[in-house]
Length: 398
Image (cartoon, rainbow, N blue to C red; front, side):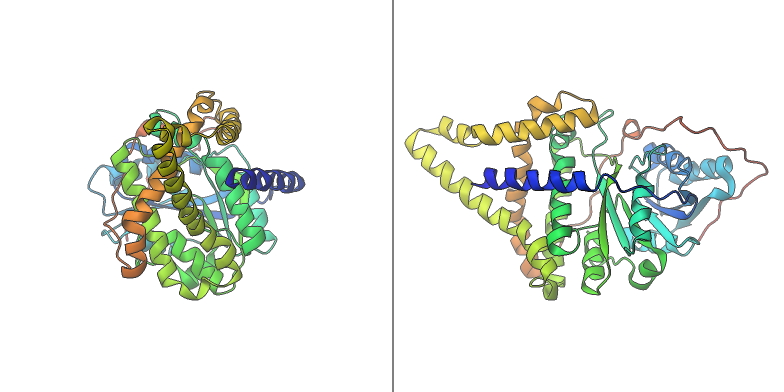
């Protein structure tokens, strides 16, 4: 039943997506400031900043060093010497991601700001920023893009996740916008805001999922949130099961805490179509899995449980999704890996059972863990020539 519902939703989404292909990106260049928080991002920071500075849509790139203890500040100084006034380097004492972003906002001069992470590859030679900016020009106050997966140098887990990640994010957030009035979240890896709106509300450090908290705050205050599915960026994924567990725990616990913080939203249109469905899918999925596994174990034994995890229709569907992802990433290994995406489904269910329900009633979150950074996962583009910089630039501090 769940598989057939998914197939119908996918067909509807495909038809809607085809109807939006005529939309054009904005051609207004140099009108966006990018803000990048950096805490111990030395391995990947230089390439990431270089990609942003090569993007013609950005006026300036503002990088805020949140009290790093590695070579982040030295990397920023080198980027400053290379790019001059287009790069703003800020160093501060450690405050957390929310405070870091708000400090960077103090240096923004454009009407729009783009927020991303230091480990995220933002293609400098594509029109993703133009599609986000076009939504702002059509009246949106904030726009979310699609955080895909950087597979260069990645291990097995990122490849498994990449099999379904991009299509599922596009489908879920577009349906949330159509039915709930706004996408579930503007990802911290790819979000554009009107500067005045972000200054008015800003990020809070009351949760470890400040991007989700801000998105729901804007929705609650009547601001227009939109999704730009043709803006795709590539954040680094976790390569170890331990880091992946911690990251999903932070996301799911943060989601539960935000439900507690935004109770008034839960029974609104946004709550019914954008917030609750994700929780209901977990409840339904856990119930179906436990019932099916129990019956199979009683009737056919342990091998029946394994077979029940991979029903034929479901395997076919995820392989089709995996084929699309394989074409997009130019990595055909994703097709046979697609059925293993059930690992992430079970991971989410387990974390909800162990941590999510407790977080909803207590509001407690685990300490934020920082994943290991890999320099190979951010690839600099050579599509643009190096700028000509004259004079000696000093590192600005705050």
